[in-house]
Structure formats: C-alpha cells, structure tokens
Image (tube, rainbow, N blue to C red; front, side):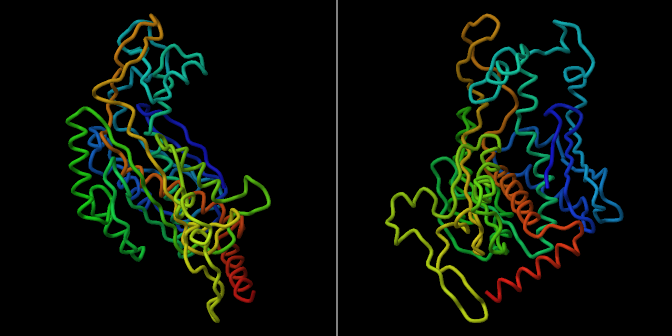
Length: 387
C-alpha cells in the first residue's frame, strides 16, 4: 500500500490518493471525520481550529460503503481558502501587489530558509504553505482508513500524552478501551488528573509569555500478530519504518520503543523480555520492555512507541532572523499558531503508526480482497498455533 498527498495550508483543499487497499473493505467517511475532529482538539490550539471544521470526502474507489480495489481518493476542503484566493491564486499576480503578500523573513525552526535555498524561491510562502503542519490533516485521514482496515482483524490503537514541558504524567497500566475513553475526555489527553491540571496551567502560562511548549506522546497498538516486518533487510524492519513515519511528523525530533533510551541505563537482565510458553496459548513474553519488537518484527505483544515533539517554532515573541533581500536582522514574521499542539500531535502519531502497521499487515497477508486476506490471516494463526 502507498499514498500521496497534495495541497497547501491556505489552498482550496488537501488531497490524498491511497493505492493498494483490497476490495470489499467496509469504508465510510464517519470514522475518518471522527479522527479529523480529534486532531483539532486539545488545550493550547490556536484560532485556526475555530475556522476549520475538517471533513473528508471520499471521491473515488468506494461504492456502496465498500472499497472496489481501485485507488481510494479523498479531499479535505480548507474553509479558510476564501480569505486567501488571491494570495494563493494559481494564476499570476502582479509583482508588488497586495495579492502577492510575499514572505521574505524566514522563521527559526521552520522549513522556510532551507526550502527557499533548496528550491530557489524568493517568496518563502511557496515553502511554508506546504511544510505547514496543516498537511497532517490528510495524513490523519489516510491513517483513519488504515484503522478501519485493522479493526477488521481486532487491532486497536490508543494514544496518550506522557509529558508537556516540565510536567510528566504518572505511568498507569490500563486496558486499552479504558485508556481510549479516559484520554478522549481529557483536554490534554492524559489519564493522570493531577498532571492534567498542571499541564493546562503550564500551557496557559506559556501563552501569556508568548512562548510555546512541546512534549512526549505514546501510541499503543494492541492485537498485532507476531511476525509483521522482517529481519532480512534494513528497510523491511517494521520498527524502523514506524520510527521514520513518526519523525516525519512536523516538529517531531525523536522516537523510542518500549523502555527506549532507558535501556542505556540498565543491565541486560533488566532490559530483555523473557520467553514463556503456556499450553493452549502458545509463546508469550514475560514483559514488554522491547515495545513489541525484536529483530524488526512484532513479537505479538502490544506495540508501544513514543515520540517527542519540540515546542512549536512560531512564537508571538519572535526570535531573531535575517531578511533574505537586505540581509539585515529582523524579528521573525509571525504566522497564526498554537501554544501547544502536543495532544493533537498524539492523534496524528496514532494515525501514521496505524498506516505503517496496516501496510506491514498487507505485505504479510496480502490479497486483492478482504476475503482472501482473511483466509491468509486465519491460516497463518493456525500455523503459529501449531508451532
């Protein structure tokens, strides 16, 4: 499976084409729109979330509620487009006019300067419009399709915020359905209510200071069979592919699985998961410090992956920058932004992880129809059970 996206943050729409989905997969717009709504929530979001009410339209590859096997196409309209029709016009606009609204001051922490240099663009709007985190909207929509596929095989995905700024939530082991329910009710997507109050206060203080906050989010995937991914080539290792997908999210700077970087502090006896066998249930691990992976393949334990998001780069107390025309120092231009998008980033991360798991699932059990995949999957589970 693969997909491509297109569109700009202030353009008319975001578009995705998903190729490789099997036929006869039940697929509707409602679960996609639920994920898009989740992405727009969270304490610390900016004013654009009040403008956009994102909904996806399935415009190809689905008929009568099921996929046909053809590429699935979807679009998400930008409601804000009406205010940007001249600035983002496809047709040429006279140089120096208000419609040009040229950006010549790169913002620290963004793709503005690097992209301008790479693509030889003197108007940095041509870079920031595509590099904006608005692009994640359509990636969430694609991930929501993957979730509908995975749900057919009992695979569930949850996410929670572990840290915002200096505030760390206490670890709590919960059934995945309880984790989903509790975090969905939290404005910062945490289970720990004491940490929730402190996180909200920290976000409010950062906003008052004209500053921003980052954090750490965790995604858990439950019900994954053993053996997704492979050890035989570097680019077939599923944990590696998930890591790449997570770090590809705007503002994400690191990723870890299971106990992650903590493994460097421990002895090996406190890192590796012992192998157990139970008659009638087969092999299992005595713990899940590896986060569901060994040798680039799933172990059958839940996938546990965390990503770290840096503070959003656009500050209302701008950092120093340099005008690309005059080379003089200026304060960086301010674009509309959030104070903290960590809770929303957790939703994005859930969905990019869902896509990678679904892609690996299709590679393992692939077929042209859901019926064929189901037969392959059931046969494999029987094989594993006899091992």
